[in-house]
Each structure stands twice: as C-alpha cells, then as structure tokens.
Image (cartoon, rainbow, N blue to C red):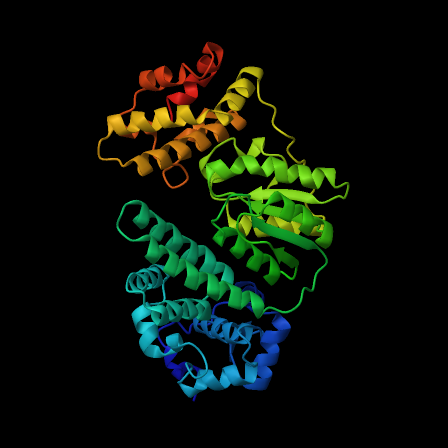
Length: 434
C-alpha cells in the first residue's frame, strides 16, 4: 500500500512544497530522525527537487505528526508504522484515529473544538478522548494546546458564566484534558538540557491549566520541571525551593485576587540568597495594563508560547532582563489598603444587606459571596494602586456591585462608620468601579 492510499490522510494535499528544515520545525522531529524513518520504514517518502533536496507535502507532515504522537505515547516506531498502514490505527490506541472519527471530528481546530464541546455536554468520555487524540495526531502538542485546548476551556468557561452549561460539564472536560496532558508528559524522555524549573499556581489560585501546559512545553524543550500544581502555599514553595534548588520559579495567577500573593512568593526567592529567577504570568495580566510592571520578578509574556521561549532564554543565558522591584504604595493608598484588609465583619454584613435591599432576587449566601469577592478584588487593586484593575472582564473579575443597583453614595454611606474621611477620599476612584 502506498502512502497516497492511507485513508486517514487522503484528503490532505500531497503537493511537494516544504524542505526538511521546515518540516522539522513544524513537527518537532529532528532531520536525522526524519531521514532514518524514511530509510528504514519508507515513511514518509518525500519527492525530490531537481537538485535532489527532499520536498515534503502537507500530507507528509500530517503523517509524521500522527507517528510522533504514537511514539510519544509509548508505541515503537515500527509498531506505529504498522498501525498506519494497517488501516486500523485504533488497535491498541484510542479509536479516534479511525477514518470514521476523523470525518466527524474534522481536521480544523474549529471543527474539533465543536466536536469536543458537544461530546462534553453529553459526558461522552470516549468521544472527548478521541477528538483530543485525533488533534494530537495531526498537530504538534504546542499547536493543539494553543489553538484547541485553551480556546475550548475559555469557551466552556464563558458558557458556564452565562448559565449555558453546568459546572459539572466544565469539570468533566477539564478533567479529561488534564489526564491527556499528564499522559503526554509522562511519556516524555528524561531531561536533556541543563536547568531546573519549579512551576505552579499562585497561592489561592485553583486554575491550573495554564501552568500545567507551560510545564509540558518546557519538558518538551528538554528541561527538568518540578510541577507543584494548584494553589501553591508559601511554605510548600519554600520547602520545594530548598530541595530542588531551581534556576527558575514560575507561578501563574489567573484571577485578580490571587495576584497579591506573588510578591510574597518573590520574597522567598530573594531572601534565599541563591540566584534564581522568579517569574510570573497568567491570564489576568493581558487584561490588566500596567499590572505586570508592579509585580516583583520577571513577567514572561502574554501567551504560553512566549512564556516557554522566555524561560528557555533565561535558562540558556540568552535573556538577562531587569526584574521588577516591589511596588510601594503611596501613603494614602497604603492606609486605605490596610483599612480594607481589616474591615470588621459588621461592615461585610452591612455590604451584603445593601445588596439584598437593592436586589431582592439575591439570597443571603449569594450576597455574601459577591461581597467577599468584591472586597478581595478591591484589596488587590489597592495593593498595586491600580483602580483600572476593577474594570477587567467578567471571568477575571466578579460582577460590580453597581450591577445590583448599589450606588456610590450608598457605598460611601455604608463605609463611613468604619473608615476615616481621608481613607474614604482615597477610596473614591475605586468605589466607583466595584
């Protein structure tokens, strides 16, 4: 059977266009490996230019990505090639690789995202796994994570926020994606490059997918990464730092209220006496201009691809940035910050009652949750002296109290028994936003 007859890839162009360097960059397979696979197994079988150079097609790239996904999953290359030509690539693997599933899932990220979300709403474990395996067969890990997984997680989060899906669906899809990423990470070879990284989520931050994907990207680049997971406590971070002696620590913050924990983590690194880069990132920063400049350490960029590249450059010495120093609040804001941090319970109860008076549809539990969220976000904005933080998109921020009919005058009146006039004056630009 010729390569052209492999049904799984028959709808992909076979026009010879790309040289071996471009194919290597696209697939993550070294040129020496490409030549060895061609010599030993006849896959792929690229055309040749008049000068004798190999010219690969889009179909060749798809086949190579499929083979690499099998090898990364622990299948020998000999067995992977046999599966490819058997027309039964599902044997011993996920059934996604069969032509029928390929047709239903599609070959574009948009069609695969739609299939994945539709399967998630049906709690169809097999189909979700099939779509993901199909995607990893056609594209690199970095491409699938960037163009499929992250958009799907964002979309399902938006659906939950809008009430169009349940929290159970969100957890179901996220859990299966997490399993797939951990399986890929477990199949990777031992670290091949010098440099150790500790990665995890900021204290109090339970949204781990960004940190987990970044860990996978760095491991695929050959670095040793110790992944600490969700909501890394400061004591746990200090213990890991002493044991691992990393060259880079990276923490992710995905919500505004968890960002204020980053300076505390940075201080652990600074006080250790050992040179290590403290770096940070997360979904909150691209939506909050100026925030990354006020967190001590090194910001690693708005995307996970940027983050992986910058940490690579740090570890190899190609990038020597000037780290941010600890942000110092002005005296009025410092007083306001301490006052809000130490609000008495009676003040929080009064705020919740304001909400209940303004919106009778709320329950006391809902009102208390909204108040708690609003106060944490207000504290974060004061910490970095950035009232504009409170204008971040919903998803990174709770609903403003004004959405429930609470006016700035009523807020000021409510706070007046608990805060001094000078603190209220400093708070005014912030109260208009919460």
